[in-house]
Length: 328
Image (cartoon, rainbow, N blue to C red):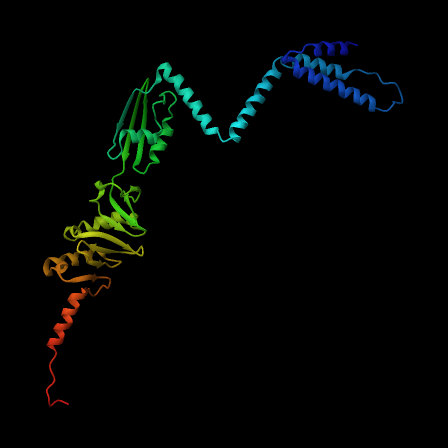
């Protein structure tokens, strides 16, 4: 039979490119045989037009010769990829792939030979490159400027960055650094902060020891405005050791000699002006006191030290009039 003859030729071609053809043809023949065995005897003769033969012809004619090989390769690659992901080696695989790609680009003349970094003050060149993910294996051709910029801006010290790739081998990085503004203490931790309250780093370097100290929850974001107000009264600012934000509502001043100044919640500028005037005229800060309470708008309360309080008590005892012997 013609169909059987063509089937025989297809099965004899056992090369890899014919595997998928043979499988498809065999499936069609098997389906035809099963249907023939199960079919009921027709009431009248039926002419067999052999539709399966036509299907076999279409498969042989239109199925690409090497599709079986391509599908096999795709299956092997998919299995390898699944193993890499399942085994947790995806990052290592991507890193190796990136290194290979960069090595090819470097060998083609796109190695980064010159690096120019502008705007850095606190960060070193090596720190900037490490933050941006640029190393000795990086090539200028495959360096993603947007990714490098995002990594740099994610660092607390860097507020903005611009990346320029100058082919074939020069990289220019322009950064805008935040400025160390104050030291912020909360829950026993001391940090260096910028004007906008961003924590730049833990306080570990003595080069920041001269920065003003603010203490308390919320003091990091409120420090800029309060310290700017305090700067208007340099006499008070010069003797202040720390500004303490109380209840996220108002400020206290802790002076260098330990004196506490309790400022009001409102009209802080006027309270600082009165405080500065009292010290200049009455030498308030030099007196034997431990606290000055300015929270009430119509009065100023002074708390004496323990020794000063005892001395004051003894003084009033001596001034009390003595009773005469004849007095009842």
